[in-house]
Amino acid sequence: MNKQVFTISCLLLFSVWLGGCEDLLRETGEPIHVNLTIDVLVLDNLESPRPDTKVNFRSVKATVKNIGAEEQLDTVTTLSKFTDLNGKTSFIVGYNLHDDPKERIDVTASTAASSVDFTIITYDDAAAQSGDTNIATISRSVTLTHNP
Image 1: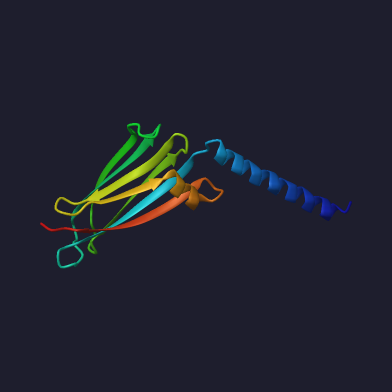
Image 2 (image 1 turned 180 degrees about the vertical axis):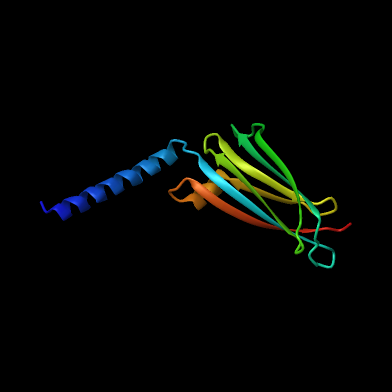
């Protein structure tokens, strides 16, 4: 057998094997690491950017062990930041999500006198973003209206 043909055959077999292992890992509960970025824009009631406004951020990784069961809050993160001159700020958090039991991330952003935005990221959302890498980078944009 030609050395090049043998090398290519080995690479193809290794690629098929590796691809099968990634699927097997996902099926056996390999967690997906989620890098979550929430970009927040705060506007006043005239829809102008509101600088130097405190934004409160809360994220919760929750687990539901059985349908209809009470949720277990695994990890709670709370942060506060002030908006820049353009009324913007960002929050970045990271979590590992598992499929069994079902886990999700609940995110809330608010100001003292604003609406509250609530976002849910599920294991299935993360799996759709991660492809075969088991790493998902998810970004969400939130606009809050600050009405003092």
